[in-house]
Image (tube, rainbow, N blue to C red):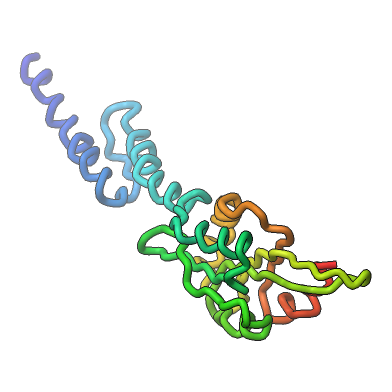
Length: 194
């Protein structure tokens, strides 16, 4: 009897080692060699825990916003010191940062030329126009630029971070989603401004 009782720890050892391995390595294929009842559930439970941080890293609220993003936006809104602002997500820093600021003398064509053909961006454009009543007005556009040719991962990150980023910029009047230059053409801007 003592020998049989002493044999139990040797049966418990493989799951114990497996338990430690699963925290750092992907779980091996399921096997039917588990001797004790109920222990077969441990691998799937541990695998779920090991995968949880990866899911959280891809969640919507993962991107911080650099203070300069808000500062430049406030300058555009209050002082009209910029015609446009281009923002990009720095994936290494996990942060939205200012990529380029356009001078007030620049026009819409200058702005459109700064949007990269194969990469996503957020952009602010301050559009000046004259109403039918001959009144000078301006509207602040937020543009989510996500070209079809951009990487799928990049499109997902920009889409999932957009709402949080927009909340940091108080004063946006019109929002546009664009996947190609036609969707963000001057005629579209003019139509949405009125």
